[in-house]
Length: 96
Image (cartoon, rainbow, N blue to C red; front, side, top):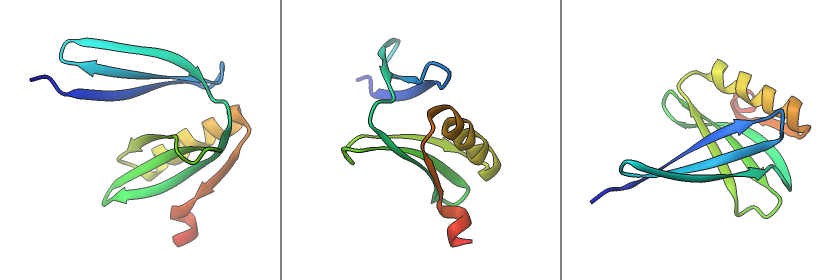
């Protein structure tokens, strides 16, 4: 039995993202706009895994990108912040 795997592709220049769902050898996905985006947050998921979380106004929809290095997560989040013009909350820096 094949399991579902999801991944994201981001196009900050066009302000959109694509959710790709893979089922075995097959993949499907469509482009969506970053509409109603509220914040971008950097947080630590587990030891050595950092997440960049795109939070929307509905609070139900979240997109999460994971990184092994904090510097990579911060760089990605800053690119998104600049392109999408939303607030960035760095919980790693806050919690020090």
